[in-house]
Image (cartoon, rainbow, N blue to C red; front, side, top):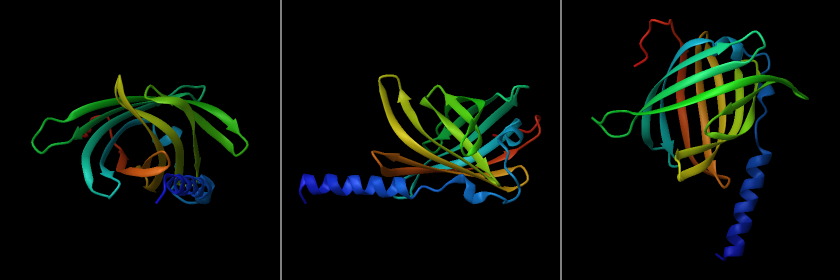
Length: 192
C-alpha cells in the first residue's frame, strides 16, 4: 500500500470517527440524574484499569477524590491516583486538580473544566444520568510528554455510583481505554 493511500485511509478514519460522536443529550431523562455539582461534592473513591488498544490491562489503580463548590457555582476536584504497574511493587502516585466554572452554551448549561495537564480548557456537559467531556491530556514528565485525546463518558448507574469510560486516541487512532467506578463515601471511609 502506498503512503498516499495510507494517509487517505487515515484521514477518512479520522473524519468518520469525528462524525459519529455521540451527544450527551441522548441520555436526557435517564435516572438517576447525574449532576456534577452534587456527585462531585465531598469524598469519592475510584477503582479502575487502563487497557491498551488490544484491550489488555496494562495498569490498575485506586483513587481518592475530593470535590467542593462555592456560592458562584465554581468547583474544584482534587484527584490522587495510585497506579499498580508491577506485581508487588509500590504504587505510583499521580495527582490532578480540576477546576470548574459555570458557562452557558447553545446546548444549555455546562462547566468549563481546566487542569494542569490539560493544555486547553474543555466543556463538561451533562444530561440525564450522563456526563461527557472531550479534551487533550498531556501525559508524562516535563521534556518527555505525549498528548492524548480523551473522550470521557460517565454514567450514574445507582445513587452515588458512577461508571466512567474514557477512550484514548492519538492522531485519530484508538490507543487505549480507561474503565473505572466512582462511588461517594463518608469522609471517614478509606479508599485504599
